[in-house]
Amino acid sequence: MKILLPIALAVLTASAAWSADQAVLDRGKKEEQQSCVPCHSLRLIHSQRLSRATWSKELDKMAGWGTVIHDRDALLEYLAANYGDDKPMPAPAISEDGTGKK
Amino acid sequence: MILHNDRPEDLETPVRYFDSYLTPVDVFFVRQHIPRPAPIDPETYRLTVNGMVSKPLSLSLADLKKLPQYTVPAVLECTGNGRGFYSPKVPGVQWGRGAIGNAEWSGPRIADILKMAGASSGAAFLETDGADTGLAKTPDFIRSLPMTKALHPATLLALNMNGQPVPTLHGFPARLLVPGWDGTSSVKWVIRLTAAAEANKGFFMNPGYRYPKYALPPGTPARPSELEVIEGMPVKSTITAPEDQSKAPLGPMTIRGFAWAGEQSIERVDVSTDGGSRWREARLSGPKLPFAWRLWQIEWQPADPGYYTILSRASDSAGRVQPIVAEWNPSGYLWNAIDRVGVTLEKA
Image 1 (tube, helix red, strand yellow):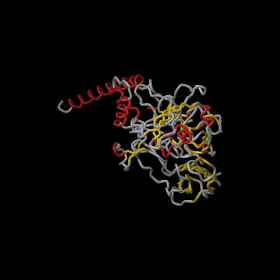
Image 2 (image 1 turned 60 degrees about the vertical axis):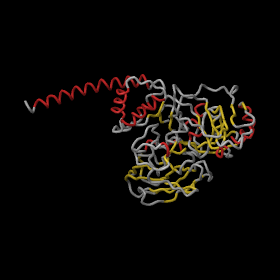
Image 3 (image 1 turned 30 degrees about the vertical axis):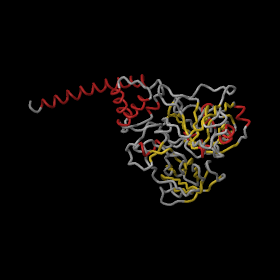
Image 4 (image 1 turned 90 degrees about the horizontal axis):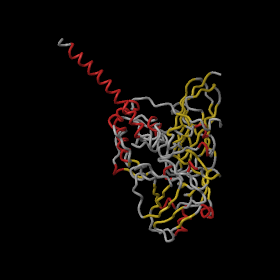
C-alpha cells in the first residue's frame, strides 16, 4: 500500500489534469473565436508556430491594440498546445484564383 | 497565390510566377497590416499636402496627372520576406520567398509635389498617411521618410503599375514608391503628405520596422534603445528554376532566377550545384540598374542522377555579397541568406 497509494494518486491527478486541460483548450478555442476573429482571419494565427512566451507577448500586443480577452489563460494554453514551436509548420495554402494562368 | 491571411489579405507570389522581368499585377504579392479602406472615388479623391510648407495643397487626381510623369522600374519587397526561414520562429506573417515583385511604377515625383507646396528646407522628414485606419485601438498606418530620400528623383507618388492604374489592393489611386527601401515605406492609398521637422512616433515607425543595431543571439528579445529604422534593402537572389524539391529527367538544364540589391545594382550572381563546394558565374540579363532586379541564368550539364542542392549568391555594386547565414532578428526582417533549392534528377 505504501508504494501503490502514491501511484494511484499520481494516476488520478494526471487524468484529472488531462480532463481539465481539455476543458481549458475548449475554452481557449472559443476565446479565439470571440477575441481574434473581429479584426483578422484565424489563418494569420494558425500559420504560425511560436513558443508559449512569444504567444503570450502577442496577446499583450493585441490587448494593447484594444482586443478584449476574457479568458487569457485558456487562450494562451490553446495557442501553445496547438500552434507551439514544437509543432510542424503547416503546408502553404494556395488560393484558387490565378491557378489557370501560366 | 499563397494565402497567409484572408482578412485583411496577405498574399505571397508562388516562385513560378517570377520568370519575367516584370511581375504581372494580378500575381503581385499583397501585404496589409489593417483592413484596406473603402474604395476611393477617383473623382472626389484629394491629396492633402501640409505641414512645413508655404502653400498647403489639396490636389485632385487630375492635378497629379498634370505634373511631369516619370517611370521607375523597381522591386517592391516586404521587409519580412523570408521570415518563415528564421529559427527560432518569430511572430508575423510566415513569408517564404515570394513577398516580392518587380514592376514599372509611374507617376509624379514627390519632389515636384513638395516644390509646388513650397516645402521648407528645414523639414527633415516627410510623413505619409494612407486612407486605411486601424480597428479598435490598432495604430494608424503612418510612415516617415527622411526628406533626402523623399526628394530623390526616383521617389514617386505612383499612379500606375505596369502601365495600368494601381489596383485597389496595391493602393489605388496613389501609393508611394520608395525604390530600394523596405516595402513598408511605400505607403498605399496616400491621402496626406506632411513636411515635418521630426519623424512620426507611431507604432509603425517605432518599434515597428526597426532592426537591431548590434546582432542579437538567436531567440533573445530586442533592446528597444538599440533598434534602428530600416532603410535600404540588402543584396539577394532567388532561384526560380528548377522548382524546389522537384524531379527532372537527367540531362542538360538551365538554372534561372533573379537578383536585386536595394538601392544598389547587381554585379554578379554565382551558382553552385554541389551544395557550395564549387561556384560558377551566371549570365545576367537586362539593364544594370539600381532598384530593379536582374534575371540570371546558367547552363548545367549534370553527369549523374541523384539529388542536388543548388545555391545562388548575388554580389552588388557596393561590394555586398549574400551571406551563408542570415542574421536572426526578433521581427524576422531582411532575410537574405544565399538561396537554396533541391532537385532530384532521374535516369531518362
